[in-house]
Image (cartoon, rainbow, N blue to C red; front, side, top):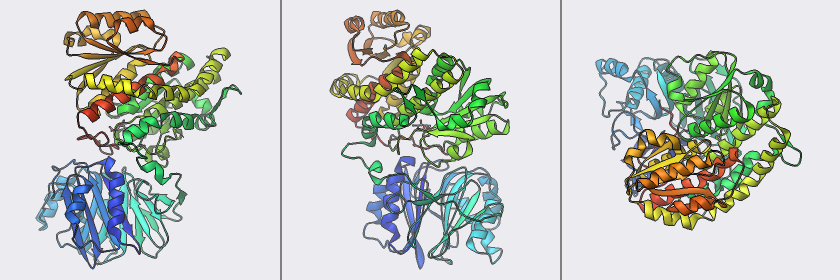
Length: 613
Ligand code: G6P
């Protein structure tokens, strides 16, 4: 949610900032801007994508070897050229970019107005730069100290980067609940919301901690302290495990399509070293350390948002069926505000691709305060959730750039399956023969996902039949109910068609009223249990002239006869079925969105990483 990038060093900053903003565009894309420090400060800001900014700045003076940039997802103030970041102080000396929300901005704004400040934009961010200016006026302090004092007066969430033309070559960066990474190169520094703009320049990074402020100066050592004024002696420099190829489309039209096709590999990567069918074992490092607390837990509470919440629902089926541990799955945003009953006998599991979702982070903080063991299932290495939790496991899917999550979803489900198996074994709740069967089949899943990809042309054809329908209904039972929710979410997100996901049996309690010849109903029928019931659901739809698109297993002759369209995928063990049945739904949404002329990777109003509540 908003992307930040900054540079200081011997090179020209502008091209580095622009390339960085393009990498961060998935975080927000309603306006973009840069500020360059070259004697004076030059700012260029434009409504729209980074490409609009590039066209606007073309031919203008973009010199300067220190600069900051921003790509916005609007919270306060509409997306336009004025509300776009960077924002400048009244005297023009200071310039700032911000990701997050300053919650007490209206109180601060009123006070600053009384002190003579005037504001150009409707943003909370502009208040912050005026506040810094006001504090600077009050004493002869270095920029980092002025910024630090200003931040002690601010409530809310922020990642900020500030420049001051009276202290050129210096960048001050600070964060609270919004991420920032500092890249350390040869005589140069980079700052960004995540490591993607940095990786092509240096692999040495420092993840700025929550409540920390960094002073970055050309040719000087990096200095970090806390906003509450404690020195941090040795910033922890980490080596990035990311390659530049992972950030490029690699010949695909969209990142989403590339990421869908990566799934055989990402699922295999997630399992690597964590299971052996031959050896008959599953081992998850993170759990091993906390096994006793997991095994003795009263229940597991899963907190997540969006697609990650759907993975959590699948985990509920997995943990309860295989390990017999009671599970509750919560929207993080609801959990944190309803005073949940929770104590040290609970395990709170946070699932998050980005590791930065504000509501999930806040839910975890609450769980920690109440003594629960917190565990993170995260993709983004070094992210806030990964660092906040007591223990956790990475899904190792690599950077996911398309806003609609695909490979992170199957990575999460793979990891949660390993976790359920591990706990089931430890608790003695699973028969060895079934355990072995499941892990053998898990090893076969990447090849089976590859088989599903071969159905692409057929799915594309079904997409062409479905693309003009105003609504769609997705149904599934058991493990395929969360898959139905995920299929509907994918369609909504990227094609702007209205879609609902429902448990198949619930259809008759409402959605059935919507069914007519214009309503495509996508039913995922790969379950063996309740198979007859699913056939009845199909008949109920057919009786009302609904168009049935059925995801079936290859040997299913019965549904083939009654559905209007079938997509036949390889058979698998029932708890593993979401890993295969979700793939056609991802492809279906992708093709419909492309046929409808939508920007698949950057759907309107959405952002990949939601760092505001
Ligand atoms: C946003 C993204 C979704 C994602 C959700 C949760 O809404 O667009 O794709 O599922 O946030 O994000 P997380 O990073 O916590 O999994």
